[in-house]
Image (cartoon, rainbow over all chains, first blue to last red):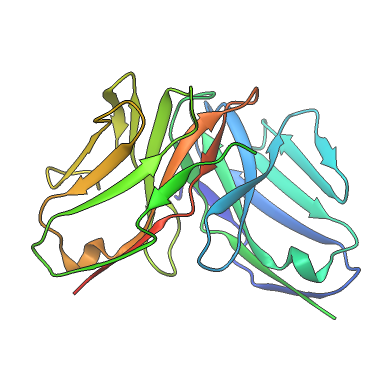
Length: 111
Length: 113
């Protein structure tokens, strides 16, 4: 079983659509969780950290369910500029530990 | 957002040659990382570095790889004798911020011929 598993994608959606990404992780002792986005041939860029209480940043909402070892990202009112690969990232140790990446889910938002 | 810089942006080398990839991490932060991403594959952890020592390394980080921080600012990844399968994008990351999140440099694209 992969340590971090994401929806295989790709997702192709029209502008304005709501899209949800799902991610599961295998190590129940994992401590911190993130969503990054990666544009083609660029570095991963932090989108948001994920907490059990859930967090929202504009059109983006992330949720963590520790019992189910499940992380989600919701994008509302998607824009063309949201087209990218979305990476689910899990750390076993809070802060200083290595990050384990999922394979990523590619989103294309079309006009 | 804190900025990590990397040089060179691209490197082409012959199999068996040594390469050194350089990173200038976020100033005043102590945790640094190297990751690699083979084209079309996921980002993979190589090594983490803290207080001038390796704190964790992956199976990929074998004897051909080494890291050091020679002058207190640059953070380098050396591959002693490159193989074709070392061709990848190499990302340096530094740990910063209240949330202790990793910020990635723009990467070095290494091509081994």
